[in-house]
Image (tube, rainbow, N blue to C red; front, side, top):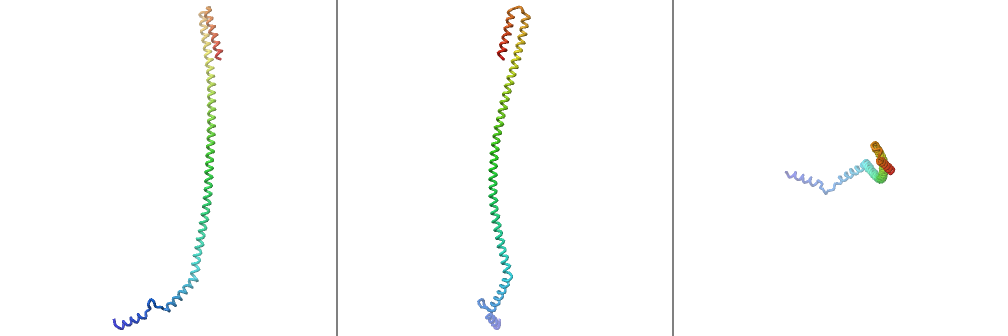
Length: 184
């Protein structure tokens, strides 16, 4: 490079602003652009941003209030549900107790009826046994009388004249009469 080019570069470097140099023209235009931008934002964008933020706040507040109402309603319904459930349990226990009482009474009634029927059957069986016993006694008496008559007729046919045979038949008939009277 030549000496002239070096001098030119040195001169330009001396006139170039450094990082700590203050450029008043640049500051002026920066402030004006910043002010215009702030005025435009203040006029057009800021109300829209504020409205959306306020709307969001209101929506969140409504959601919180709705959530609080829903929580209160849920607590109320839970209390009602617990009360209904407790009432249903108490009612179920009452029904079970009543059913047990009714079942016990029914059981006792059935047992009493069964005992009565059993007693009636035993009494009927005893009556029937007594009736059959009386019938058997009568049948035996008739048979005894028939046998006595047959024996008497045999004796009478064979030895009608002997006084001993006659006395024997009369004694036999007399004993039959006594036994018949005693059995009755």
